[in-house]
Structures are given as structure tokens and as C-alpha cells.
Amino acid sequence: MSHRLRALRASGFFVLLVLAPCVAAQTVTDDAGRSLRLARPAQRIVSLSPGITELLFALGAGDRVVAASEFSDYPAAARLLPRVSRAQGIDLEKIAALEPDLVVVWGSGYPPALQQALQALDLPTYVYEPSTLDSIASSIERLGALTASASAASVAADFRARLKDLRQRYAQRSPVRAFYQVWGNPIMTLSGRHLVNEVMRTCGARNVFETLSPLVATVDIEAVVAAEPQVIIATEPQAIDRGALDSWRRFPQLPAVANHHLVTLNADELDRAAVRILNAATDLCEQVEQARH
Image 1 (cartoon, rainbow, N blue to C red):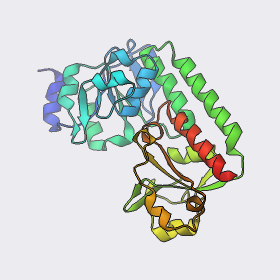
Image 2 (image 1 turned 45 degrees about the horizontal axis):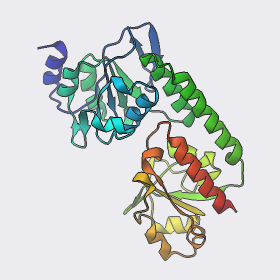
Image 3 (image 1 turned 120 degrees about the horizontal axis):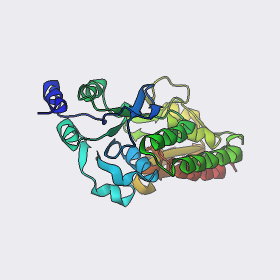
Image 4 (image 1 turned 180 degrees about the vertical axis):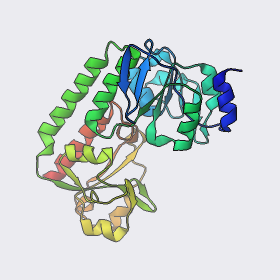
């Protein structure tokens, strides 16, 4: 039995995340501040979030992804990948058996104990956790270095150019009060520390709960009504309106309701910190602009 499998069995975990061994010419620092070196460009990659899977395909490394997490569905080819992570957890033994030379994991998506069990397998791990829109472009370049992607530089440059254009067009315009609804019952929203808050600010929208301390916070109806949002935002897959915001129609005094600015964005674009987040940002900016006028 290999050292990794022995470590896996000893850890007692059936669920977790992994990365392949790396000692390399290319050294990068991941979003957890850890250095990672690969002896050669990664050839067998495990992706542990749908956004990471999407990003690897955007870099032209999709044909080297040997397994992915549940809901990795973009592009279409990603749907065919073996699943090593589901709602019930991560199959560490299956990941170890795949012998990946790179595992990319969503940092906040898994508890520390699982990440420690992964490290016990002695598989190099890149933690992906961009905290700003600019850091997505930096992550593209770093993952591009680990995969020797020929397109990473152009993908990152295009991302930065689109982001700069959105900021120049919208960020300094008159602010629009916005409420972002994560969940309807109980009512949950995001604070100013969340990446989506930066998307809102890029559009010149001001999160009415920006100053709350928790990353995700529960608020009451009265607080939302008192904030008088001009736009109320939710997300759904493919931006299909499933009525998540319908309950706010009971409050016609809200500017967002009175002026028909209940906005449903594509969850797969906005919630995954990948290239397509700027598609959702563009849609939001257009909706905010309508509310502004």
C-alpha cells in the first residue's frame, strides 16, 4: 500500500481534498500564502470546486483534469469528469488512487480538518480563494504557471481589461442602494467583506448591509424596508426567476418594488470566482444603471 493510502486510512477520513506532489522550476504562492513548486507542468489535476474546474478549462488545461467536484458543469465537457466531491464530502481514497500531480481546492469550501488530512497524504495542494476581482486575474496567472498554459496571460489580460472598462463606466456614477438576498427564509445577505460586494461597487451600487461584520448575515424584514433599497438582487441557475424575490412585492413603498428593479442574476456566473463573474457583473451594472435613471 502506498504512503498516501496508508496516511489516508490512518486519518480516518473518507471525505476531503487533495493535490499532487510538486518540486519545480515554477514556484507560485497560493491564496493561503503557501509556496508551491512543481517539477513539471501539472498533467493530472483534481479540481475541488465548480469555479476551479471552469477556470482550468478556460486556461486550456481541461484535458488534464482527471476528477472534479459535484456541480462542475461548465463547459459541457466538465460534466463527464469523475466526481470525487459531493454534498456528503470528499472521497480521499479515490483522489489518492488517481495519483494527481496537482489538486486545486476551494479554501473556504472545506473545513481545516479535511485540509489537514489532505496534507497528510503528501500531495501538493493549491488553495484557491480570491478575495478581490483583481486577485482572480492573479490566480489565472499562477495556475497558468503550474499548468504551463499558453493562454493564461491573454485570459488574465482580457479579464483585467473587461474589469477596468466596467469600473470606468459605472463605479463613480451616482450610488444606487442595493440589497443582495442570499436566502429568503430566514433573510440572509452579504457584508462588505464578500467578493460579490466588490461586484456591486464596480457597478456603482452600495450594499445597504455593507458594514455588517459577518461575511454572511441574517437580517430582518424591518431592516431591509428601512434601508429602502433601489435594487434587490438574488441569483438562480441560468438566471431563471423562480420567485425568490416575490415576497418583497408586499412592500410597494420600497423603491426597488415600485420601480420594478427585482433582479435575478446567473448564480453559476456570480457565485463562482472565475472568468464568467464579469458576465454577471455586466448584467448587474446594466440593471443598476436602469435603477439609477
